[in-house]
Length: 224
Image (cartoon, rainbow, N blue to C red; front, side, top):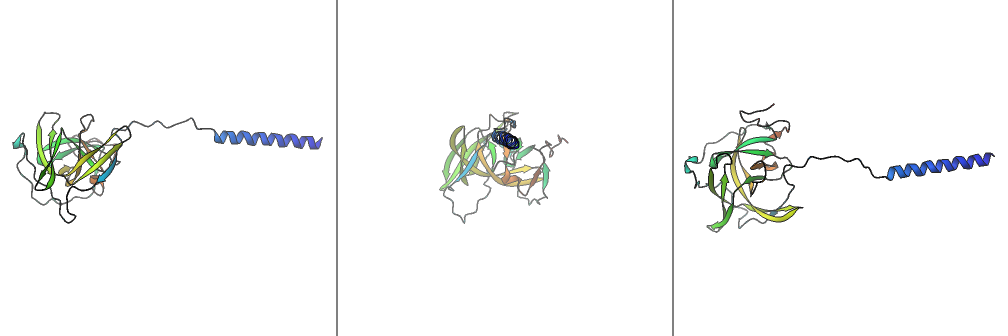
């Protein structure tokens, strides 16, 4: 009788152990619902520089305003002191200095390089160097400015749901908050996106701290 009870107890333990293993190996049906990203996920691959010597300095070349030429009064040659790290929100106004245009920008700590919306662009050569001519559209007024910049490099944009394509990279002077910076921007068609400018880590690092709960902290429309 005692042996039969022991066998029954052992069988019960084995059944409980099997049930425990089955519960541990069962897939978890609960998932996390993520909000769709505002910006499409991209992977940037830097392509070789276009005929640039490593010792050759890259400067912020002057651009021509073809349309609405009175928008530009000349380059600002004054020395601007660099303020300390600044707190900004997830959306901020950015001034394109040479075009005197203010555009709304999405601040994206996940993006490697900043990006600028252009209507179209044409690559050409000048003095053996690669340049690009492009158009900036002011969405609210319809004003268009045509500018030219030297291309400092190209990046290959890779997306899962689209074909890879090459984008030129320029250096452009912009004003964000209390800072005036000359930084790299890729030229892209952002007409289907809400914001014509994307500010990435190449501008944010060492310059800004992002508080995603705020918007327009650098303008008169500041929100707490």
